[in-house]
Structures are given as structure tokens and as C-alpha cells.
Amino acid sequence: MNIIMLGAPGSGKGTMAKLIANDFEIPHISTGDIFRENIKNQTEIGKQAKELIDKGELVSDEITIKIVENRLKEDDCKNGFILDGFPRNLVQAKALENFAKIDRVILLEVPDEEIERRIVGRRACKNCGEIYNIDTYNKKACEKCGGELYQRDDDKLETVRHRLQVYKKQTAPLIEYYRDNIFRVEGKETAQETYEPVKIELSLVN
Ligand code: AMP
Image (tube, rainbow, N blue to C red):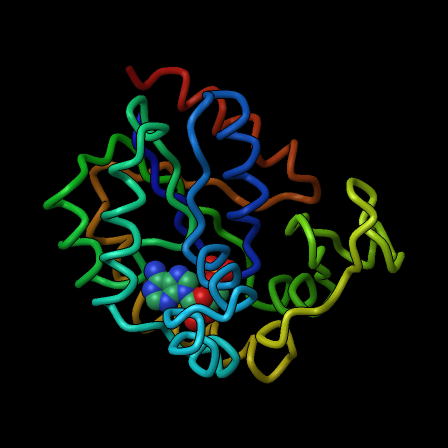
């Protein structure tokens, strides 16, 4: 099963994608995570992406599409995958059609004010990438691996607002583009509550 997670930054795409990946035994492919990994390892891609990411802008389509195309060729994608953060505009969506068929698009809907509140309180583990929110976990070390928790540079309020504008302008048109294949879900208090209807919906896809 090939799935796309759509939704604004901070809507909970990553958390939901992890739940789906775990239940349906498909890899979770986050382009944001791939870029952050490249930045950490100071690769050529990382160097090109860092400045744009820190400003809340999108990385070039050319680089991003190539990364995803190569990733989907890997063995673990044979039975499907869940894309988180890709496609992020129409150019990427059209390119994706050349190398993958999408079964379902999940759209997470969360009001802007809630998004701002969530992202500004978000902390990520430097080591394993686990995500926390200071509302529910306000510690300095990761519960899973003990790694240091930090706030992403692009999670600062001004950048978050810019990322929301970029989402509305460039990514939101994908909602119309995928209209025949979209499953909308309202982001609730807990990830598990939000996930329940999605799980049922996906178990109906064959
Ligand atoms: P995310 O973790 O999905 O919020 O992504 C963090 C940042 O990585 C974004 O704000 C973009 O700068 C970059 N990025 C992630 N996915 C894409 C994509 N599909 N196209 C372009 N840039 C991306």
C-alpha cells in the first residue's frame, strides 16, 4: 500500500506516519528527516538544503524528487511506503506519478493557532529523531535513547509562520489535486484518537 501523508507542518504527519508504518509494516519516508540527516552528516545535499530549511523555504524540486525516486527503489518499499512531507507542490506530485502509484492520501487538518502552539513546543531528539512536546514531556533527554532534545531552528515562531504560508501557497493545492483519493481527518488531542479512523480506512484499501 502506497500512502501520502498530507497536512501543514506540525499537524502531526510524522507521528501518524510512524503509527501507520508500524501497523502496516511499510517504511516511513520523511523527506525532512532525510534532509536533516544530510545536514548532520555535512553532505553536499545537506549543505545546499540547510540555509533554505532554516528559512522555512522548500529545497529544490530537482534534488527532492531525485532523493525520493531513489529511496522508493530500495527493497523495503516493495510492499508499499508512507511518504511524509512529499510531495509538497504540484511539480513534485506530477513527478511522483512517473515512478509510483498512490493508493491513498491522508489529510490531517489542524487549525493554524493550534499548529503554532504545537510546533513552538516541539522538541526533537538529536540522536534518534523522536519527537516530543514540552506540554507532555518537558525534559532534556530522550526517553527512548537518552539523546539530547533540541528545538529545530525552523520551529521558531517566525519561521513557523513562514512555513505555514509556504504550505498554503504551494502544498495546499495538492488537496484539490488528490481530491478523488483523499481521506480527511481532524487532528485531535492525542495521536491515538486521530489515528483510529485512519487505521480503519487503510485496512479497507487492498
Ligand atoms: P518537515 O520535517 O517535513 O517539516 O521538513 C522540514 C523542511 O525540509 C521543510 O520546511 C523544507 O525546507 C524541507 N523539505 C522537506 N520535504 C520537502 C519537499 N518535499 N520539498 C522541498 N523541501 C522539503
